[in-house]
Length: 410
Image (cartoon, rainbow, N blue to C red; front, side):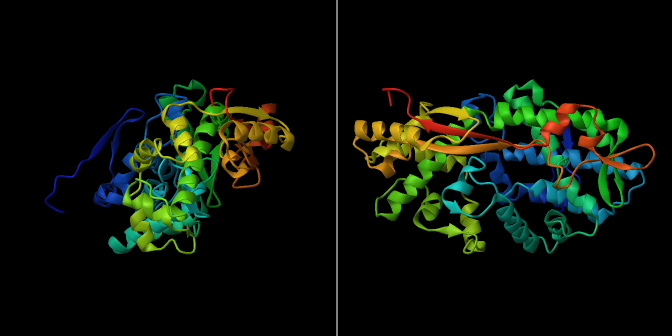
C-alpha cells in the first residue's frame, strides 16, 4: 500500500478538481463496496423524464466529501474546534452515508427487501468496513448515528442544511437541466457557524437559505416527484414484487445469482446479517436492467407487460389530485383492464393503483435551521425571513395519485 501511487484528485463537472484528503479515504473509495456506487443511479429512473440524469451515487458521494472539506475549513477559520480525528470522521461519514442504496436507489427498499432502509444498510456497510480498517470508522459511525458529543458534526452530515442536500440539489439540477434547483453551495457554507455546539447560519446568509429552500421545493415538484418519474419507479417496484411472487410459487426466472437470492427469500431487518450484506453488495442497476430485458418475454402476462412498459417507456397514465382518489374510480379502471386481458383482480392491481406523495421543503420541528443575528440571538429561518412563502414551505403538501393503463393500446 505504501508503494502504490494513490490518485490525489477527481475531476468533477460541478466543482472542478476534488481532492482526496488522505490515504484512508483513498482506500475506502477503492473498496468494492464503494466502487459499486458507480453502478447505482443517483436518481433512479428519472432519466426517462430527464435524459441527462444518468449520474451515480459515486458522483454524489465525492461531491459531498468535497463540500465537507470546505465546511471544515470555514468553521475552523471562525474558531470552531474540529480535531483531526473528528475531521476524518466527518469525511468518512459523508463519503459513506449513501453506500447502502440498492439498485436504482429506492426501488429495492419497497420491493424485494422489506422494512430495511438504505440508512440501516449504510451503517451495516460502515461497520463491516470499520472491522476491516481496524476501527478507523468508529467516530464516523458515531457521528452518523447522532451519538457523537458535538451535535453540529452530525448536522453537517444529516440535517436540513447538510452537505448531502447541498450537493444533490446542485448536482441533480446540473444533470437534469432544471435551473431552478441550482444553488450557491459555496455561499451557504461560507455563512455557517456554530453556537452551543449547534450549526447555525449567519444573518447575512438568510437570502441564500431562502433560495436553497425554494430550490428544494422546485426540485421535488419538478424532478423528484415528477409524475412520470413516480409511475416509472412504481412500475419497477411492482415488477420486482411480481418476480418474487412467481419465484416463490416455483417458477424459474432468468436473473443474476444475487438478485435470485433476494427473490427466493423474505429478507427484512431481522435477518439482514453480514452474509446477506455481502450478497446485497453484488447487486446494482445492471442486475435489474438485465432482468427486465430477460423477463419482457416471460410467459406471465403481468411480469412481461410491466418489463416492456419500462424498457420501451410505454408507461401508465397518472393523475394527481388534492383529495383521495375514490375507490369507485380505480375499481372501474381495474375491471376494464381485467376484462380486456382476462386477469384476476390481484393481477390487474399491478396496473391500476393509487398512492400519495408529500412535499415539505422545510420542517420547523426537526433540526430547524437557525439564523444567528448580529445581536447574538438565534431565530428560526421561517420566522426571520421576510418572505411570506417561506412559512408556506413549512407546511406539508400531500397529493393523491391514480395510475392506470392508457386507452386501448394497453
